[in-house]
Image 1 (cartoon, one colour):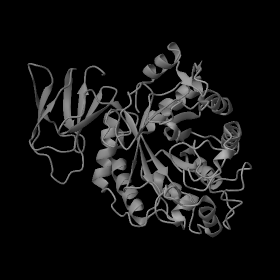
Image 2 (cartoon, helix red, strand yellow):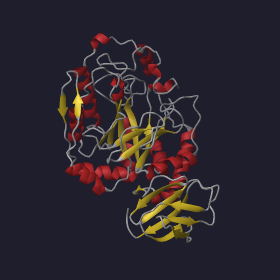
Image 3 (cartoon, rainbow, N blue to C red):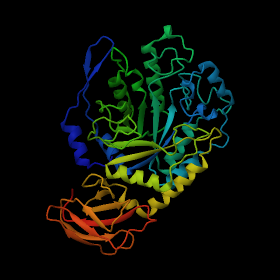
Length: 447
C-alpha cells in the first residue's frame, strides 16, 4: 500500500489496537501493539516500493503439480523421499536477484517452509530441510539473503503456520490423508518448533524485511476457535527485529501486531476469488497474484498472463494504494521459467520509463474508472488510461487543475471543468497499442 506516512503514524501511535483471540478454553486475551519508529519507517519504505516478487519453491516442484501436491492424498513418508533427489544445480542467487531487480521489483518474498513441512534453509529444529535431507546440501535462503543484501533488494520470508507432515501439528481441514498419527498432536511442542525456526530466520540471515504468514484458515471450520497464540509470536519477531514487518494471509481484518494487510488473488475491497472480502485497513496493503494459474511450479500450466495484463495489474494495485506481490514458481532445477523471465523483462522496460508514476505514490484521488485509474505524488496526479473508447476522458477530481500534459512527450492536454465537479480531458488520440497512456495533472492542492 502507498498511504501517507502521517496517516500510518497517527493510526499506529494514537490508537491502541486490541482484539480478542479465543482459545480452546473459550477465554480471551487482549493484545495491544504500538510499533516502533523503525517499524513505521519500514512500513513507509514498503509502501513506497510498490512491487515485489513472490517465490514458491520446494521439493513439490519436482512433481510439477503445484505446491499443494502432498494434500492430494499422498503419504507424507513417501513424498519425503523426493528430497533425496532434489538437486537444483541451476540455482544461481545472483541471476535470480538481478532478473528480479531489473524488472523493477524492490523485494522478494520466498517460502522458507510451506505446508508440506520441508524447510528451505539450514534449520536445527528438523533434519527435513534442504541442507540435511538433500544431496544439494546448500542453504539457498542464505545464498539468496546474501545476494539480496549485496544488490539492495529487501528479502521477506513466507512461513506456513500449518504442517502436513509433523504429527505434533493439530491438523485442521487440510492435509488429513498424509498418514500422520493424530494421537501425537502436541500444540505446545509445535508452537515451540515454529518460534525456534522464526528465531533462526531472524538471527542467521541478516535484515529481514517481513515475515509473511499463511495457514490460519486451516482451522476456520473448528467448532471451538483455535488459539494460534499470535500475540507472543508477533512479540518475538518484533523483539528480534523491530523493523521486520508482519503480514498474515488469514483473509481477516488485521490483528494487533500485524504491520501490513494481505489480499490473495484480489485487489483490496474486491473478492472475485472468494478469499479477500475483509475490511480494508489503514495499514500498508499488498495483493499477491500469480503469473500463470499456480503458485508452485506446474509443468502443464503455461497459461501466463501477458506483459500488458501484468502491468495493468500493477497499475490498478497502485491506484488503490496497494503493492503487488507477483509470484513465480521456479523449476526443480533451480531456474526461473523462461516465460517468467520474459514477463519480468517486459515489466522492467515499462518501469524504466514510467516508474516515476508508480514508486512512492499514493492511491489516486478517486476510485478506478472504466478508462483506468490514478496515482498521486505530491501535487502531481497521474492518470493511467488503460482502456478508452473515446478521446474525452471524465476525471472525477475534486481539486483545482493547473496544467495537464502527456507524460511521454509533455504535450499540453486541453480540458474543461464540469459544473457538477471534475474535469473532462480532451485527448487528440489514445494509441490503441499503448499499454498505459499516462496524463500528468499538476494540481493546486494535494489529495
